Amino acid sequence: MAAVQELHEVVRGPEGSKAPHAFVALARDGANWLLKSGRALGYQRYVDLLDQITDDVSFGKVCCAERNEVKVAAAGFETNRSRLRDRVPGLPI
Image 1 (tube, rainbow, N blue to C red):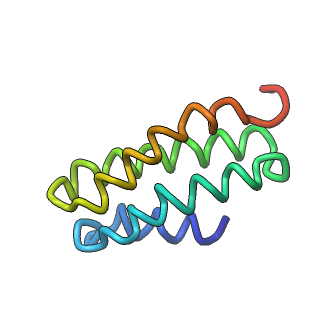
Image 2: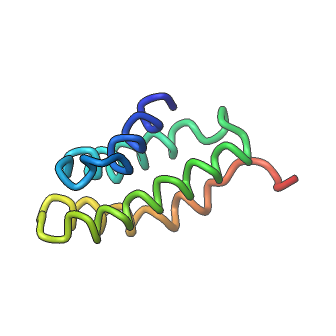
């Protein structure tokens, strides 16, 4: 979880547009980690992280629009997003 937070800080920081690799890591690795760790996170933390990663990936599509690797990773994330939403653990409180 700390890695996702650190990547979030990089992409939203002043040098975010110069760090396309951070957007790619969030879109690919962040999504995979969330799928694997969902039950351990619980409902609210999972939903919050999913929303944060989704927002960061969307920001990357705008901020690094000319970078092909960001486009490819964002497209892959969009494909997995329904799986991520379907795997929300537990019941909302």
